[in-house]
Image 1: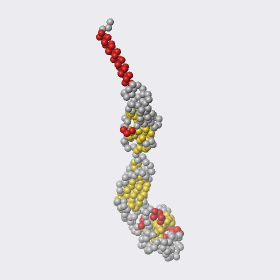
Image 2 (image 1 turned 180 degrees about the vertical axis):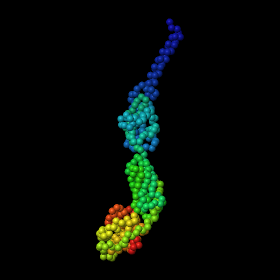
Image 3 (image 1 turned 135 degrees about the vertical axis):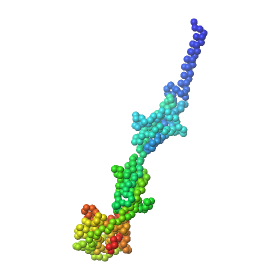
Image 4 (image 1 turned 180 degrees about the horizontal axis):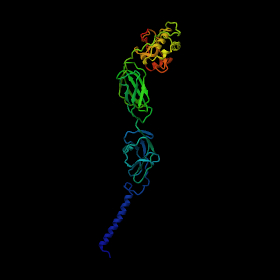
Length: 403
C-alpha cells in the first residue's frame, strides 16, 4: 500500500507533465512565438528587390566596402521578417563571397546594408536577397550584378631634360613616366613657353608614353640665346594627371659666322631671269624648282658643303637666292619663326605682299635643300608656307645684310 506522501508526490508529477504538454501546445500555436513547428499556413512573404548598385553598374575600387540598397519584402503574417543575402562571383552562386543570414529591415520601405569588407577589383559580382520570418521563407529576389574595376591612375611624369644652359638649339625633351593603370590611350602633353607662367606658349606637343619608362619629343631648331620653360601632364581624354615639375633651359649663343666657302652670284652656265619685280599679291612663281636644280648641277660641291652648323658654307644658299633675284627682286632669305636675327639655313622666302620686303611676314616659305646636314643633301623645292602657319609660327623676309 502506498503512503499518502507517495501518492501526493505522484499526483504532483503527473500534473506537472500535463501542464508542460499543454503549455507547449499553446506556445506552438502562437504565430509570434520565437519557435514555431514548420511553416504557418496562409502566410505569404514577397520577394525583396535589389536597388543599388544598379544592375550592370561599374564601381571603381576605393578601398571601402560597397553599400547595398534593398527594397523591403512584405508579409501577410503576424511575425516580423528579416532579410538574407547572398553575394557571389557567378550566377549559380557556387563561388560565394559573402552571406548574411539576418539583416533587420530598414525604415521607409528600404534597407541599407554595408558589406563588412571591400570587394576585390577585376570581378563581376552577383547578389540576391530573400525574406524569412523564422517559420516561413520568401522567394529570392531577381539577381542583380555590378562590376568592381581598378581605379584610373595617371600620375604626373617627371620633367628631366633639357635643363639649364644647354649646348644645342635642337634639344630633346625627356620625361620619366608616371604610373599609369586602369585606363588606356594616355598621351603626354608637352607645353613649352617663353614665360615662366606659361602665358607665352610657343609649342604644345603630344606624345604617347614610351614603354621603356622614359618618353621623349623634339621641336627641331629653336632660336639661339633664348630661355624657355616647359612642363608635361598626362591625359586619357577623361582624366588628367597633375602637371610635372617645371624645367627651364637656355639655348646657346649663336655660332660664329661660318666661312663663306666661296662667293655667291650666279654660277657659270645657270640661266638667269629677265629681272624686275612682280606685282603685289601674286602667286608663288613656278620657275623656282628649276633654278635650284640648275645651281645644284653647276656647283655640286657647294650643295654637299651646305651644312653651315658643321663648318659648311652659305655658298649654295647665296647662289640660289642671287639667281632667283635675277628673275624677281622679291626673293630673299627667311627669318626662322619670324626672328629676323636667326636666318634659316636651307629656306628662302618670296615677299608677295605690298610695301618693303625687309621684315615682312607676307611671304611664301620654300625649303630648297633636302636632307640638309645629312650624308647626301639634295636640291629641293618644298613649299612649307601652310604647314608653318598651321603650326602657329611665321616666316619673315630678311636679306642677311647682303642686299
